[in-house]
Each structure stands twice: as C-alpha cells, then as structure tokens.
Length: 300
Image (cartoon, rainbow, N blue to C red):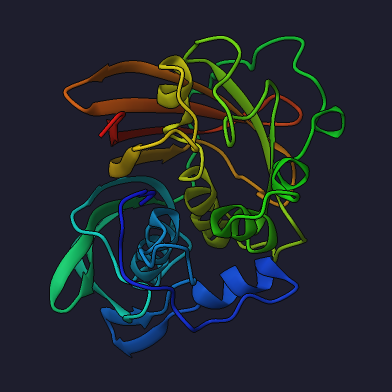
C-alpha cells in the first residue's frame, strides 16, 4: 500500500544493505509455522507503513507453498483492508479452497494483531495447451538504455522517501516521458510508459518472478491517475493508498529482464482512481495484465 498519511515510526530491521535486491529477497523468505501458516517481516519504510507490493508478494508466496505440484499462479484478486506496521511481524494464514485436476485456489489472509491487513485469493493452474493470441505493445517506444532512470532523477534529492526509492529500491524504473516524482507532468494524460527491471540476476523460479512482478508494480499503478490530474508524488496534501489489486499472468515472466508497462487510468471518481497496465517483454510479448483501484485525494 502506498500511503502518504502519517504512520508509526521507521522500523529498525531488516537494515538496508548495499544490495537492495538481496534485502527484498530476504524479506520475501517466509518462516513456516505449520502446513498452512507462515510468518514474515517487512522492509523499513518512511512513515512506518508496510509497502503494499511487499505484502502482495509475500501473500502470493505463502499460497504457493501449499501447492504440491508444479502449478503456477495465473491470477490474484486482493483487498488492502488496513495499513500494516513495519515494526510488527505479519502472519499469513492460507485456506485451501479447491484442488482440481487443472486448477487450485487459495484464500490467504495477511494478519497483524490478529486482524487482516490484506485478504487475497490466488488461482494456480497446471501448464496446458490452448488457443493463443495477445495484444501487441505500442510502436516507437524508446529503448530502456535511452531512458533516464528514476535512480538518477532522485539521487540528488535530500528526502527520506527519495532515499528509500533510490538506495532501497530493488528495481530500476525508467519513465519514457518525464516522471512525476518531483513535479507534475508537462501534459495532463492518463497514459504512461515505464520500463522496469530488477537490479540484479534472479534464480529461474517462476513463482518468485511472478511474486516480484506483483511487488514491483505497486510502485507505479496509480501514477496515471496523478498524471491525468496534474499532480505529482510531491503534491502538498496528497493522500493516496491502494485499495484493491487484481493481476493476471499470461506467460512466463522474468523480472531481471526489461519489462514495459503500458499504463492508463480509465476512471477517477469519489476519491478513488483506477489504474490499469499491460506488461510486455522487450521483445513485445504480453506477459501480464494488472488493475488496481486506490484512494486518491488531492488538496486535503
């Protein structure tokens, strides 16, 4: 959950290391309590609230550890119910809803203090043949090597949030048009293109790669809403938080290779905004589709 409202103080553990990807992988390693229960920690974060992408990834990994064969997650549907506290451990309680011949379903609650901060259903499928088609990426997108990294944009900014997203970020983000970290975009539009890649190699583990895609996407999913309404992450009195999250994986994905997010914001109303994204490989293959609704309040 991305949230600009005040929260508890910063966590002490785990400490940020010179290798932020290793730090994230360590946080995503859960301890098993019993067959269907796991515990995990959180990344330290300014404001003290658990990063939504982190708990999404952990919840997916907890559900996957109750699958006995090679079935892979193909979709998740989750609701962020309460802000999490980075100082407190998170318990992941998995309910085995169904194990069929092709599909398995799990409902997982991420709990702090005995109450859920996230509730998510995950569906898994055996690899099977079937009909195939896919959308294609937009034309004439600059290569990621020709796009400025968010690390360069924020490295000179003396602010705890900027420090977190540069020194602690496990992913390199590159906005094809100007980013909206510090200032609104020159043009109001709900369209956004972002290149993204992990800042280091990863094991060839599809469950881990899909969990890390869920982790990373939460950083940008609501940006098209802000862009459309002339706001930035530095807009005074901005209050923004993820409310729900849906994600579909269509094909194998490798987050340690460049991925292009083609984003939009179809609607904003009632203090809520909807962000959508198609995720493509550098070769133009559609690997995932994502939707997230969030609370977006400007000016108090």
